Image 1 (cartoon, rainbow, N blue to C red):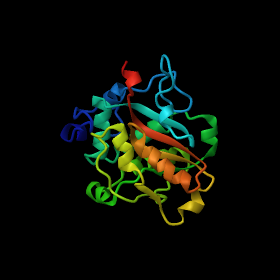
Image 2 (cartoon, rainbow, N blue to C red):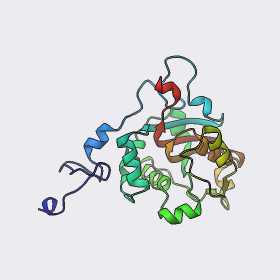
Image 3 (tube, rainbow, N blue to C red):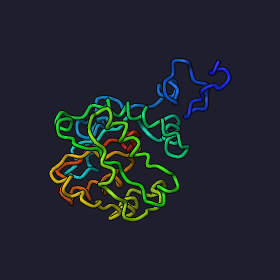
Image 4 (cartoon, rainbow, N blue to C red):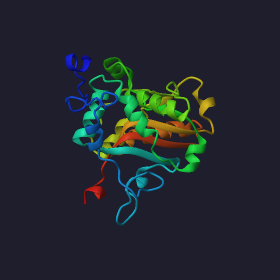
Length: 238
């Protein structure tokens, strides 16, 4: 009766959900999300190219051990799921995404060494506008399943930056250069540790690399990345 009077609508496609659907994104949408295919690079998780060097590993600093992402973006369904969380205020989407991120296979040494999840921070003005940090919500969902803490007070965005959406890779790097710093008492916690940086999407890696550089410069030993979406490279489009 409740389903008849108050039908459940998928937060991503706006269609009626089935009785068997859990959460607020329907099973049909999750089935349409374009997963990264196998085999993949052991370090960055990117599908292995037919020839040449791995297109994502070349973007990663040497102190980044690994990176994992769940699906390709942009994509109509995957992008709609991200938008439901990031722009439409459907916080509950983070739990379903976190459930899937927590199952991604990292190298054994990363699983042994990881001590905390670090969400990529928002600028204070953007945090006030949105009311929450989607990366923190994702990190919290993963941390519950991995049994490790989320250190959301370690990394701070020291200045606001324009949106990266329409910038070239070089402009993205310049845009976030020096944009991150460490919070009070953070250095003693991160010294010598392997930390997992969490964000919603990995595009060129500029933002995550800038965060990793700030943490490494302050004493972190190793960083790894975890994101829901990953942009295709030119090698993937050939």
